[in-house]
Image (cartoon, rainbow, N blue to C red; front, side, top):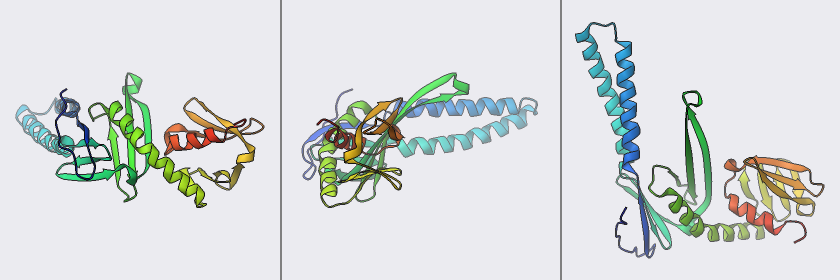
Length: 245
């Protein structure tokens, strides 16, 4: 697909790329939902007098079209435009201007969703951005070239997240990665339990979980990777604290 040419932004800098919603991915499931509604309505009214059944079917389909149409239109014009120093996020007629330095966390989540008792499976992925203004932006597979978009965003955002984490540690402020995991200059914390850096024995990623260990190689805490925010910031600090370094 040809890249749309967009002017540079006076604040966000040079234009890099644009990532609109894939509208076909909206229309296909919308059509599938309407087909299912029509089929279920037809089955339910199978023994009803034809004229009455037709009237009810038209009414049900009309309501379904309104609901599905609202959903499609709500997402129709969403778009990310990536610039050198940030990006714009379009949602309908509203456009938010986000600088990379304003972002306080990123959260990546992927899973396989099963339908019809496991007969149909679909992989889903979400990339969630949270800003210091308490704005939350969630990107998913509806966006074109999502892998390329999230990779570029992560590369641009990470230096600012690492610098922010460094300042937090220097000021004595804890960094929270999960409701059960935080970190400060002295070590790792899970609720009321502490694993000091002197007793930190490394980490292991296995079966979709991060396993934190003490110097006896015992697992101190295990957390699902999908539940950790700013996971690359956490791993960068863990690497610096690895034994024999």
